[in-house]
Each structure stands twice: as C-alpha cells, then as structure tokens.
Image (tube, rainbow, N blue to C red):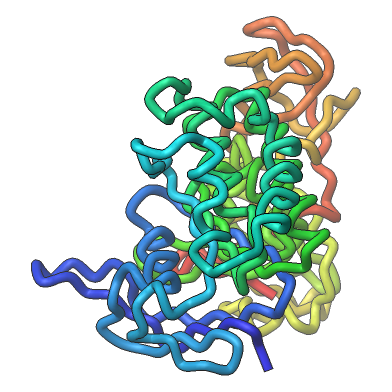
Length: 372
C-alpha cells in the first residue's frame, strides 16, 4: 500500500478558479517526488493540501494508512520548508532550529546533538546566537531548512526552498537535501519549476499543467519519452525540436517528410503497432505494397542532432555559447532545428545535419499525445 496517496484531489476557490482538477498520485515510503511545472499549474496548491494548509474541495489524501484529508497541520507529522523563509523573529537561530524538537518534548541532550548535526551540515554554526533580522536572505533560508530537517517527520514537504539562493549555494544545499533524505529514508515531496533541480533530486517527477498531471515517471523517462507535446516542450532547456509533417508508410518502411520538402527521414519503428495511427491506406498495384500516411509532429532532443558531411542542409541563424557546449539554431527545409554542439559555428554558415533516428519521438498534432 502506498505511503501517501492522492485520490481525485481537487481544489476550487470561491471565485471559481480550479487550481487542482482531480489528480491521482501514489508515493512509496522513502521516495523523493518532485512536482514540476510552470507557475499556476497547481503544484504548490497540491503541496499545501498535503500539508493541511489548504482544504480540498474534492478527493482524498491518505498518509501512512490514515485519511488526513481534512485534518489540521498539527495532526500531520510533516516537515515543511516554504519558498520564503518563515522564522520566528524574536528567537535566535539556535532557538528557531531547536523549536520543533522542544515542541515534541525531546530531551535537551538529543536536541543539542541534532542541532549541532544539522547546523554543521548547513553551515550555520557561526550564526546560532544571531537573530533572523541580522542574517542575509540566503542564511535565513539555510536556517529555515535546518529547522525543518532537524527532526525526522513522516514526510518532508518543500515549496521551492532554494529559489532565493545564488547558484553556488543552491547546488550545495540541493546535495545536502538529497543526502539527508536518503540517509533518513524519509518521504519527500518537492515543488519546483527548475528542471535541473527536478532531474537531479527526483526518484520520480510529476509534471503538472493547468491543475492536471501530464506525466509521472523517472527523470530519464520524462526526458527521453515525454507523454505529450507539453512535456516535450517544457522539459529540457531548450525543449525538444518539434517539426510538423507527415508519417508515410511504404511497404515495410516508415519515413517522415513535409509536403514542401523532398527530405525523407527514416523512422525506426515496428510497423505493426503503428498501423492503427496511419489513417489513410491505398494499394499500390505496381509494387503490391501498402501505403498509408498521417499528419504527425516529430520530436528530437538537440543532443541527438550532429553536423555531417551530408544530410539535411541548413544555414546557421544563431549560436548560443554555454561554456562546455553551445546550442546552434539552424534553418533547414523541414523547419528550424536546434543542435547541441561543442563546436563553434558562424552566423550564416552552411552545414549538413544528421538526425539520430533511434531517438525520434512522434506525437499526434491534434491530441498532443505521443504515438506508439
């Protein structure tokens, strides 16, 4: 049985705004789940309902075999880290961190041991005697994390806890959060719009949009096998190259082409499961081979495109230098493509491209869903 389960969870506000539209999610004990999506997709509202800070208007939340749907936060054993640190201004850093343990009657010796452990790990040992008003924003967020992680609750709930930090501190604290969660085997639900953060932390990612779940899967599943066009475009920086065209079957082969181009890209796929998506069929009496076609969207990640001596011709229209690599935008007869490359290219340079056909993803342009 899942440790945390959301069943048809919904939240509609009095003004009619449907923030969460009936989502289902099962989380195993010790899993690190990341809710990923753009602003307004419902991920923070979902987290707040799990915490008891928002009351669902429909559905059920079960935590550790207990129905907690309408229980107050005080009756749920959670550690919550907010996007914007919420520290007690009249307490020192030491008192802020120790407060959750004092509140549940932990012995002074155990409080001291836990406080020293988490303060050392988060680098706030020198700040213990200071008050929140004396700290920088980054240090206040460290203290907020320390207060949430000084004890071992049933579940960690984190709402973009690293959003106010600079890049160096984000990487450092990201690693700490994951190590702490793994060492204690605590279930964690983490909200972010940062894809790199989601990829590096999650056992599974839940991609949300418009109050609904678009896809649930491991980071590699989400990245390499997006369930629909939204996930393909949203996940990845930049997202997938997406080209509108036609999937054509001729005998036992499949190709992707565009009506205005004589370029044909081979599709390495089993013909049998693709027959159901090929809507038009004819019989070629000369070759005795069946032909069929369907409008599709072809998707491919930038790293699976490379320059070649021959292939799809194109002109470089933009080159973005990223240090260890770059992204090159190329105008081709089948549309604009973005290629990840360690080479430098000049604007206007003519090149040829090879697409790794084994990494093609096809989508239905009407529904947006991935094809078999």
